[in-house]
Amino acid sequence: MEHYLMLRIAHAAAAGILALGLVIHGAALMYALWRCPGGVEKTVRLARRFSLPLLALLGVSLPVTGWWLTHWAEIPLGQFWLLTSILLLPLFVPFGLLLAGNLKRWQLHLASKQAVGVKQKVFALLWWLALLALVVAINALMGIKPL
Image: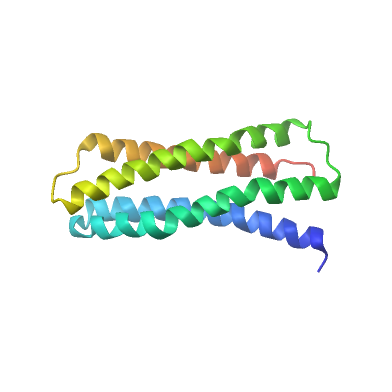
C-alpha cells in the first residue's frame, strides 16, 4: 500500500475513533450517573485510567499525521480550512486537562463517600461537550478540504 494512502487511512481512523470514543465516553458516564449510581465510581476510574489517555494519544497524533499528509501532498499551509483546524487542535489540551481534573475530583468525592455536587457534574458535561464540539469542527474542516 502506498504510504500516503496508508497515512490518510490512519489519520481518518484516528479522527473517527476520537469522535466515537468521546461520544461513548460521555454516554457511559451519563448512563452511570443517572441509571446506575453505584457504578459511577468504577466508570470514572476506568475513564481516567484508560479512555482519557487513549483519547489524548489519538488527539496528539492528529497534528502529526496531518502535517505529514500536507507535506506529502504538497498542500500549502496557508489554506483557510487547514489553518483553522490547526488552530483548533491545541484547544484539546486545556479542555482535556480540565475534564481530567474534574473527573479526578469526582473520583475523590466518590471514594470518600461524599456526594458529588451538581456543579462538578455540569462542568464535566461542559468540558466533554467542548471536546466533542472541537472534534466535530475539526472533522468537518477536514471533510471540506479539496482533496
